[in-house]
Each structure stands twice: as structure tokens, then as C-alpha cells.
Length: 386
Ligand SMILES: [Zn+2]
Image (cartoon, rainbow, N blue to C red; front, side, top):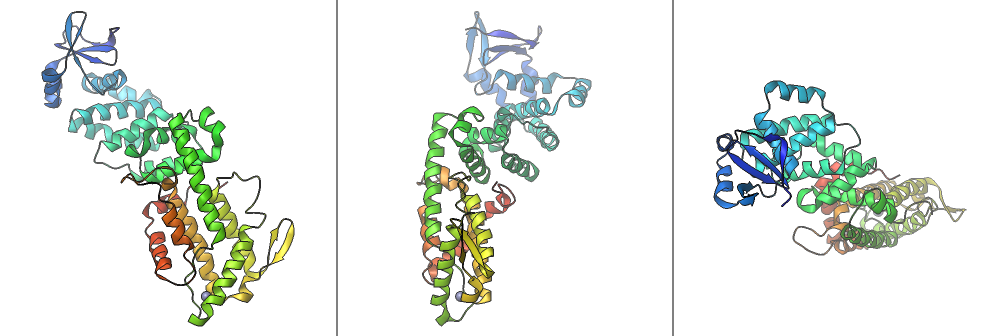
């Protein structure tokens, strides 16, 4: 084994040798036990021989993590102060993530309670670019912790995804569904999808497994859009019962023209950009209310307001808004199966969205599905299609 002693924490008078990765640390057993009785298990269970000497393997902890943790035990108050004053924000966050990770693993509750608030505060002033490994560290610390990701960090990550920051997008995708809130994961995969295969490799360095997820997502997004093109988002009529059929026909006709309009079919837009298309469709519906849309360079009269009750036109516009919010809230489902291991839940959404032939239970189901998109609220302001 090519283990080597750490340059700082291989203390002459230490009483126990720890092995993390390929680095040896020599520290005081009594200090460890003071912090948490969980360290006793190390001695009882796992050990290795390094150069004929016994060493305790600290499993699941990297050398960098253990070194940060030992710093939190051994550094003088002045050193700690110096570090917080002089180090850069990425370094600072990484050290705090490392301390929290080891503290959690060995049930050092007080040490974790010391590190986490400092980490959350430091993240608030973190400078770009945020590297992928730091995002992964942050998310893994919050998976094993009962403390959820603080709202300001959640928002910051969503914003960074929206801005296309590769470290954040890649770090979230690498963290995967076990560590990542689904709205963040969905937003990150969607942002990656829009970058295209070159971006997956070059700027995000994703694995072939992730490529497969993205291809599956691409297929699901395209399928979902095809479904939406064919059937307008269901509207809750405000007109009289016997006018509904005529109203539905007018809405279906208008929607068909709107999704065929040049702004929606813009060839510059990435094929998978469903939110971009929906946002263009929303603009086309607004234009269609009083006038025309342009299809293949030709202006086509729609005049939605002359064919539908004004209140129902408003309801139609609201239905488009809801459809956009719904897609935003469901982004993750396009890419990653739900926790129950089901296949990607896209077709039920589709069938709900398309069951609009009349005001039936199906459309009220859709309404409640729209209304219940809790994660969608967070994603709403984000991912504004470019
Ligand atoms: Zn109506």
C-alpha cells in the first residue's frame, strides 16, 4: 500500500493512526472519543496494517474530508479566525462541507451544528464559478442531514442553472436523485438537454449513463410536445353549457394555428426546448385574441375574441399559463423515474392534458394536478426559456 503520512496531522505524540484514502493521520484517540463515541467503533471493527503498524481505516471518508475535520478539532481559535478572513469562498465552503460530512458520519452533532450554519452563510456570498465537486459535497451533506437545503441556497442553485453555470448543472446531475431535490434535478437535466450532446461532453463532462438519461428525456419531451401540439390545454368554461362545444372547437382551431405559427416553429430554437415553445405559444395566443398569427410567412386571421366569450378567452390564456407551470413542475419526470421506480410518468400527464373534449372529471383532475405542483413554484421564476 502506497500510504503516506499527512504533512500536518501526523502528530508525533498521537496515539492512533487513521487511514483515509492513501493518507495516514496520527491523532489523539481521547480527542476523537470526546467528540463522539461513534469513533470507538472504528477501533472495534476495521483495521489495516501499514508498514507493520496498525492503522484504522476510516471508511467512506476521503483524505481531504478527514484533514478538514481534524483541522476543526486541532486548529487554534486564531487559526480558525485567520482562515475565515483570508481564504476564498470556494475553499471555505469546501472545508465546511468536509467537516460537516465527517461530523455527520461519526455522529459528532455539535461539530456538525457548528459547521452547517457557517456553510450556509458562506454559500450566500460564494463567488462564481462554483465547481461541480462543491455542489456535490453540499448536496450529499444535506441528504444525510435532517436539515433540508436552506431556501436561499436552493434559489441560488436554480438561478445558477438558469444562467447555464456548468459547475452547478454538472454537480447536480452527478449528485443524482438520491441527493437532489427533484425540481433542481429536473431543471439541471433540462438545462443540459438544451446544451446538446457536445455540451454534455465538453462543458459538463457527463458519463455515458447520464447521456442515456438525456436521450430518454429528449424523447419524452418531444413526445410530450407532440401531444400538446395536437390538443389545447383544457379550459374551464365560463360560457353557458350549450355554448361549450362551439367554444371548444374555436379554442382547438386557434391553438392549432398558434402552435403552427412561425414564432413557435422557429428553426433556431432547440428541438427539445419545450418551455421555449410553450412561451412562444403563449405569445401567439395573446396575438390571436384580437387578430392574426403568422404561419410560414403568411398572416392568418384567428380573431379568437370574435368566436369565444371574452371570459372563456381569458380562461384559455390561463390554461396556457397552467400548462407552462405544469411542465416546469414535472421536468424531472421526463428524465428520472419517480422514487417508486415507475417508468417516466409522462403519458398520464399527456392523457390528462389531452382529455379536453368536454368539461369532465379528466379536466378537473388536470386542474388539481396543475394546482398541486409544489416544486413548480420554485422553478417558476427560473428556466426562463431563451
Ligand atoms: Zn366557453
